[in-house]
Amino acid sequence: MADETQGPAIEFEDNGSKGRYFLRAPTGEEAEMTFTRIGEHQIIIDHTEVPEAFRGQGAGVRLVTRAVEDARAAGKKIIPLCPFAAAQFRRHQEWADVLKR
Image 1 (cartoon, helix red, strand yellow):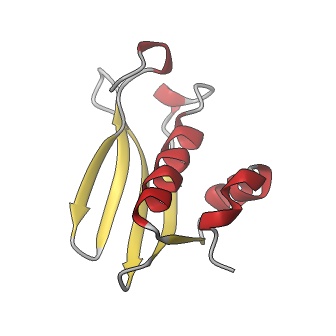
Image 2 (image 1 turned 30 degrees about the horizontal axis):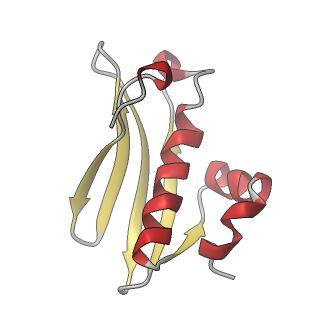
């Protein structure tokens, strides 16, 4: 369900061992967070990219938050290799339950 105050809805793409969460601007630009699956119970967030069209709107945080919510619901752990995602995990102690230590 899209929250219009937050901008476009987050979309999900699953390509087997890899996947991504993304937002598409009306202009076609995409903010994305990519991940790689490690077995059945872990994912590695390996890249987050937010183009100028999304800057200052919290798009990157929205993408990582969605991955955290999905991981929590599926009983998975996250390894945040991407510097942006790692920084978000440091800021959001409430995500500790899905952080792979």
